[in-house]
Length: 100
Image (cartoon, rainbow, N blue to C red; front, side, top):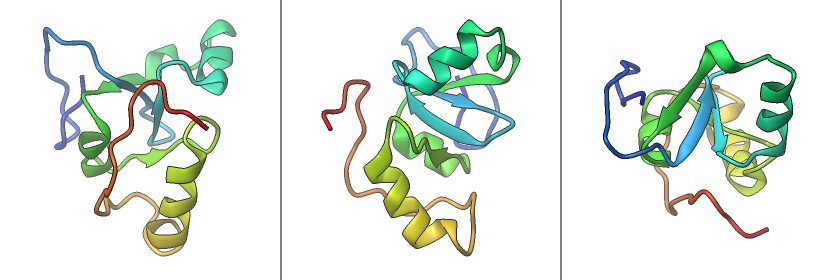
């Protein structure tokens, strides 16, 4: 998994969110966009995992617009326009299975 300092570390617990190192974004493990990219053989070498959203945001990653549209809209409205990869305060946790 990737930590807040963007350094990988071993964990006995699986990550709850997946991310793309080059795109500096994170999303649910069942994200349709990420799964399509993985099926095409893309993305795999850049794949990272996070314990939770707080860690992903602290590492400078942004929410996925496809599987986390509400979080993405908040990110874009607050931090996205001026500072695309700087973390901001998170008010609600994200789980792997978020309802629309």
